[in-house]
Image (cartoon, rainbow, N blue to C red; front, side):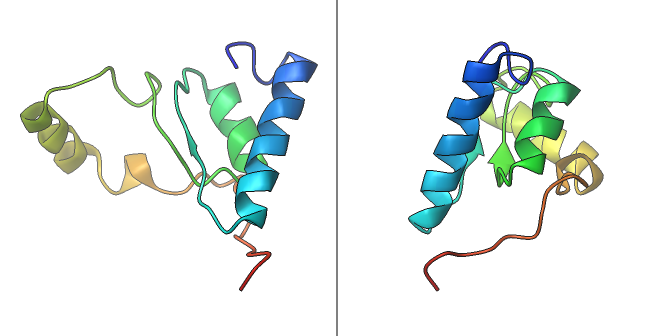
Length: 90
């Protein structure tokens, strides 16, 4: 998914995975998000959560806790492009 959202195949695969997971009642976590364009695309397709270098490089547990304290909640808030969540199977 390195070339998301520019690469059509990567985009189609991401959309399919997100849709399939939601139809099964699962949340979707995108890993390896490195750009605002990737995050915007994933959020617009309903991806629930994400992680990657856009937020932070890998951190030891104590450094992660401090990172979350310094940046929460604004840094970890839902992306404005994310649609409201709809469950296929209530």
